[in-house]
Image (cartoon, rainbow, N blue to C red; front, side, top):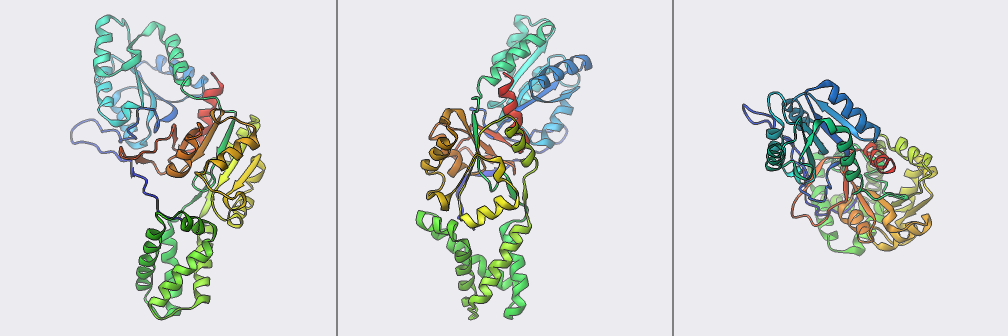
Length: 409
């Protein structure tokens, strides 16, 4: 049970307007390129030979490439995938919708501040360049087709220059390497359904009162650091206290039943916990590259060590720092500094991979660590949010692709 953090997020979604091209899903509004799928490039070119040549050239530099013959096809993919490419490459003379108009459509949407667009033309005359700039192609203007390969290579080098070379990586565990497939509220609902008959109650009544008690508890936590720490370090006790209050509301206070309900809840959480897709594969690849790794996790040492043991995570890490064992939690700079010291790394040579914007992303950035946000649920950071990651990934597989992009410079 963790206290609620007021991080301004909303699900990313898209819609298809009547009678026109599908509108791409909105994405994080960030000029610093955060929110973009690192290493993702979209090529729209009607020539199959050129599409193949560009894809091979980009893939050779560890980019993930999607190719399309026309803009309508690409826009539909963009809407369905809900991913934000780092780079769009369009031919000017595309069928159905030309490269200029396609660029204008891309630039109408928030992600355009974080994505780059390059336009290809046969002549690259001054007029073509001006039209490209007006459409929003930006820095690279229009690229003369005969020089595609050399200029695309220059683009690749520009993209890579914005990424620091990592000499080590710090990982969070929950929400990054381990995911829970059942929402905690749903788990509590099942617990109430199981125990309500024993208590002579309707499960709906039991669940409703429990939710009220739980919400009051979380509101009490919100601005109290000591209570937050106790919540993380003594989860069994705090859950039992909320259940006792719930049962007392019905004049059915029973410490033993409250304990059994907590155990039932924790059993459900464990049953619905799993390794994130590609987690072991990504960690193994980093180890094969002899990259120092650290695991930093807040919470109770017994609970966290059980997870580490169950999923055989320990062999992948050079050091493991758990809040209860170490003495402080993220975002306290001491735990980040201790990890850097253990790995013999400088902050600017290190990446931090986490799902918590307020605690871990912001905390690591204050020390100069390159912070990568795991946005597996594809939420959008609202403009009002003060926390901005250096990069965003939507799957762990993207993390290794980002690393490959840097090492192949």
